[in-house]
Length: 133
Image 1 (spheres, helix red, strand yellow):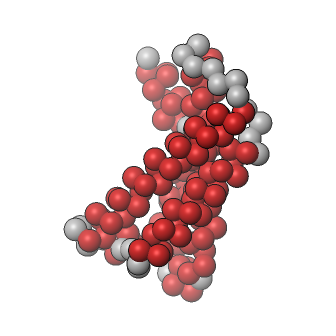
Image 2 (tube, helix red, strand yellow; image 1 turned 135 degrees about the vertical axis):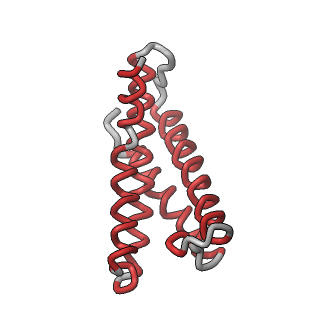
């Protein structure tokens, strides 16, 4: 049981690394110098969540829980998985920035939030389409 838990938790290693990279860019002032870095990081973040979703689907297939035979359905489910985490992330940013006062999570505008969601979903879609699973 412990082994499965750590295996499943390990699927989020890459997204966690991307988060730490973004945090490093913020704390070191790199974001202030290069604010455009936010765009590729959201794209890579979406792709990394797509990768985690694909690892989950592969795990569930090995466990004989679910097998997705249609490539279109797999891509749709991956994008849904990415959408779920993207929305949760943006809600967390709103809460942390507005109620906890954590400036790293302060949202600039509604347009910025929607663009972040779009770029993250685009990264997730790209990750799903180009996957080999």
